[in-house]
Image 1 (cartoon, rainbow, N blue to C red):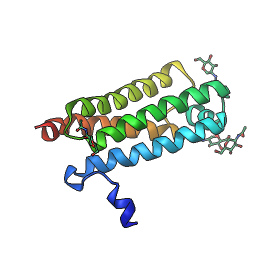
Image 2: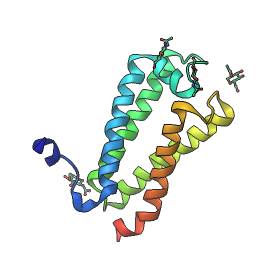
Image 3: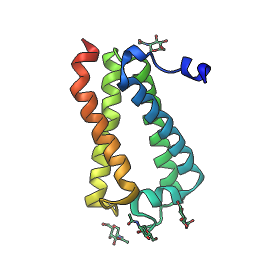
Image 4: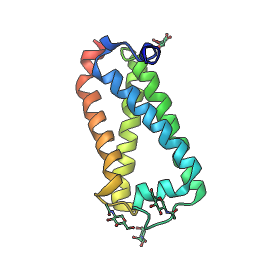
Length: 136
Ligand SMILES: *[C@@H]1O[C@H](CO)[C@@H](O)[C@H](O)[C@H]1NC(C)=O
Ligand SMILES: *[C@@H]1O[C@H](CO)[C@@H](O)[C@H](O)[C@H]1NC(C)=O
Ligand SMILES: *[C@@H]1O[C@H](CO)[C@@H](O)[C@H](O)[C@H]1NC(C)=O
Ligand SMILES: *[C@@H]1O[C@H](CO)[C@@H](O)[C@H](O)[C@H]1NC(C)=O
């Protein structure tokens, strides 16, 4: 456990760095699930009512993994404006995408789909309001 903690971003970076780290790990795991089964993507976007193609599952997994890498970079370089802004972009893009799916796709405001919406909007708001504090 102590060894694991040693790999965490500096605690002086505050709760936000831990959060970015946590979301990165969860995103990476989701990415693996999306690769393993298109059902994961279908359950997330439409509670299984609309099947996801194996390709769309892998594309979702790839995009999610890219987001995880950027968020991890931001967690370890929280005072670097480039990393910070890219981290914010991952949430901004994710939020636009997920909100768009409510209108263009088969997603609705319930069930599992609420998780990415809450995480993306909450993290974006958090990073946006703390930007000056971290970047000085
Ligand atoms: C998809 O996964 C859910 C659990 O997440 C399961 O209940 C459902 O039966 C699965 N559907 C298919 C088609 O495998
Ligand atoms: C980002 O963080 C890593 C790990 O702490 C460090 O090695 C690297 O120098 C940092 N990069 C920048 C640009 O600050
Ligand atoms: C999924 O969305 C498409 C495009 O909006 C729509 O044509 C289709 O009927 C929807 N399917 C279900 C099961 O809601
Ligand atoms: C998801 O679908 C199952 C049936 O397949 C249903 O029992 C459940 O209530 C649905 N969940 C949501 C949040 O719509």
